[in-house]
Length: 425
Image (cartoon, rainbow, N blue to C red; front, top):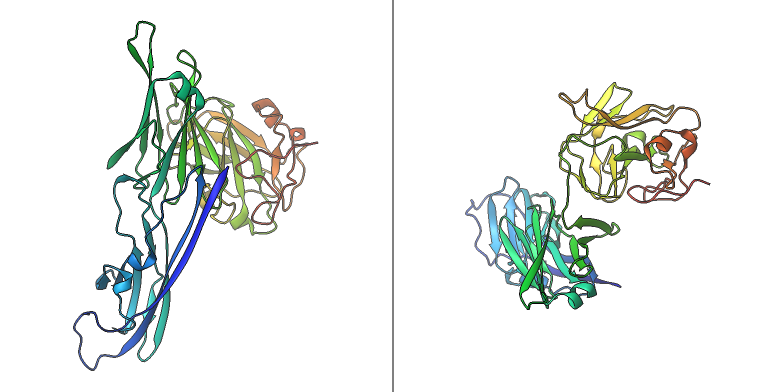
């Protein structure tokens, strides 16, 4: 059961002029600055507790000019005086805990920066710096199968800047620099009949680990000769858990060689009501295979007149969903933005997902449908959704396999972006 640790501490500190600042002329116009340092931590924990954080008073605070030049620096917020004069101009403030390591156990790192603000002559400016978890959190859970079937086991999680070994008794979370790909290698050891030792090794990756997120890796093996796999639970706020399966011998196809029907278009929001079309349009894809698929270089097309080439590595897990959206506001949680390249007609259009081919226009079709053709319902303020009982290429092309979504999501419209669709009665 998940335990959610929510810690919110706000320390109010008023600057005063006992710290040395840049030299300036006596006649220069000045204003006053007040700073509120806030520590806001909201991390979903899974069967463990986040290490007690440093108090906000211990955070390092730096004041910068808007151009990036350091004006003042305090090793601890508690060392700051109550009030300070600053020359008129534009500034910003950062605050951070002093523990930003490449990889370490029980080492959450927090960072925050203010918006750029202006100091005017004779005025007092108050700003806030909200600090949040800024590194990636990883923990390992070994199944009862592993504990009972193997004499020893450990998992090494590595990035280009550091690595940690999670031994079989390790319960602490590890913290890594975000965005650096993480390699996972679990070694399971058992004793054979002749008393010699043998090993089973599982490998996998987290391609782009994000800050403020907790990746819980479940290591399971169904006995010495049985199957084994990783299950990675991604816990974040406010998005739901995302499950990624990594098999013992993962096979990831080369980008641009996805087979027909391996990916399906399963949901289309073409006429949002709570948001404008420019903000609220989106398309959902479903991985219809038992292996991870890289969406990079695949092409989204509308009527062969508009196209967008997916320009970043997106690893879509087996039987997982991914939303392709026109704007950041379209749906909550993870999404890929295609921007203004694709617009969804309210009267219908031929939507296709294709391989790249030689120039992005001549690749083979993975899936395609015309949501304005016979049988497709009209949907305003709701997405069109493919019946989850018909997740195959032939049914996905038929209008009678689709219906209007009935479940509300964050925007106020109806839809199930990034998750299992509503059933079509």
